[in-house]
Image 1 (cartoon, rainbow, N blue to C red):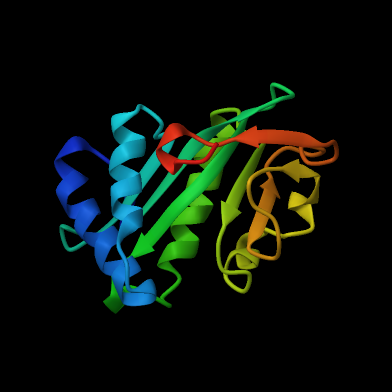
Image 2 (image 1 turned 60 degrees about the vertical axis):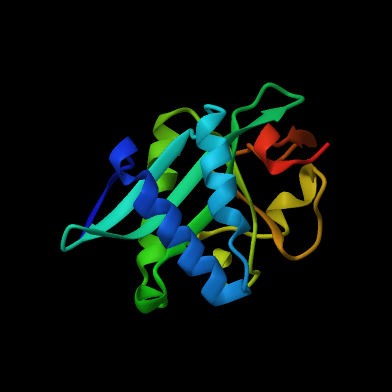
Length: 166
């Protein structure tokens, strides 16, 4: 298994993996279009693929968030694994590598809207997101501080245009 940065020649395979993953889990594939739109807008801060036997079996994308404090935050959306490889720890591996690359890029915290039983496995929590003002809230809205104290003060975030939020 190799985890590496996504390249333009991967985009069709990434679209297929994201579509398959989200269709299998949720019956819809909107996330694949989100990935394409984020990339087209230049909002792919960190984008990785997991490759096994020359085939892409996983993908993750982090996009920048605008904050009212000037702090560097990112959104994780989405992480996708081919249906046959789900529950093998591949999504967690993608997140761990992505977190390190985001940290190296100066990102102080990462925000995710996702399954409240899954993302805490790598440190995300709804409690950490309580200081974040955003269009989301509740147990599915979680945060992970990459820098100590990054989530200690109130912060308002704005998502990239591709998310379609106001």
